[in-house]
Amino acid sequence: MTVGHLLEILTIIASLLTSALLASKGRERYGYLVGFCTLPLWVITEAWYGQWVYFFINPVYFIIWGQGLYNHWRVKEKKEK
Image (tube, rainbow, N blue to C red; front, side, top):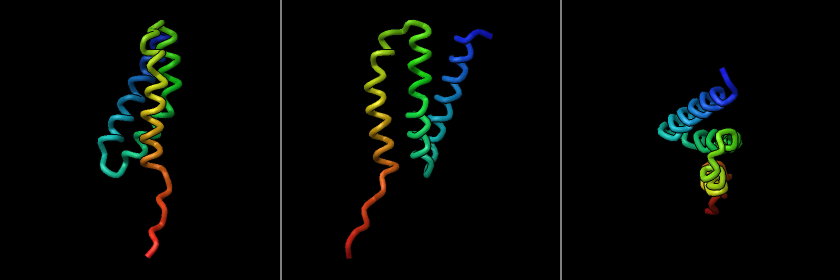
């Protein structure tokens, strides 16, 4: 097994896990967490194969996953009565 194959397998597993978590009620927040944490894996895989278009789109994904993290993990302010 080559490094490229290992990167592909890890990317597939991470993508499936992220999708499954995002599709599960009550677990969406973990999907955003896993998706955000796998961004470095995507960057390494894209650089490994020289897929520079996807490589340079990653800042957009960083913002999108970050927004999901913010929306699902922020501490909600207590409402005053």
